[in-house]
Length: 316
Image 1 (cartoon, rainbow, N blue to C red):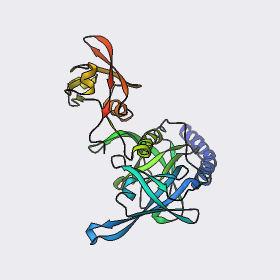
Image 2: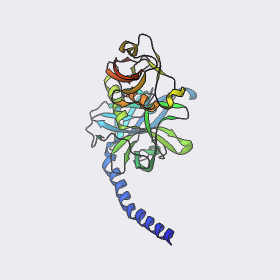
Image 3: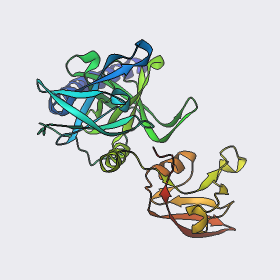
Image 4: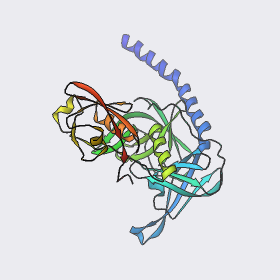
């Protein structure tokens, strides 16, 4: 009897929330689709006699005339154009980052879009949150896809990314690349960048990371990663409780700051360092030519070294 009552109560809660979920989904589509553009790019196909190949994807406005999309949709393209509100506009690539699969486009003709995507809430949605992507799936009109946040990962099957990405069970198919992703309240949470077809899932780069990438591309044409000059042995047994510096690169910013081998990392900038993920995120959000405070423990005492970061030579 108790089990039946619990089931009835659960069903009442679920079905009472369905109209709210439906209304939230409708609001996202109706309020956000005005920011979306269909991205078209012509590239040469070396596997088919260098014939022209048309790639299609999704993009969205972040400023007047500035559009964010996937790098693999437009990289090495001979021609790029967007479709927006029944018109086509020629566009050029301001640059791209193949590591995070992000590109920024600029239309040749000035456009005043109906909507640009902005968000001051930079917290990633917790696992289990409803998410909605909007895309020009298979080149069709704007299609919403509902799913759930299923993880926050910096590594997948041996691939290590420069920062934490949001995993969801929203599949990424033809035309979905570059789709903006929202929570059910309409908050913009990121852009779809990686497809996991074997699991009908995808990864999204969160807004905070995307903003850092886009800012660099707009100003320099690429993403500028910082060089600090410390190595960490992630196979060390010491990493069970601490992140310990295993090597300091000679003549590096780290060596010049006074950091030493066997220093235990406590914090880097605003990031508390307890895990490998903390360390990689701290480095990702650090830019070249910054004065970066690094707090360590050495011989039982805490001290802070200020690292003057340099540009990583392989940033491009």
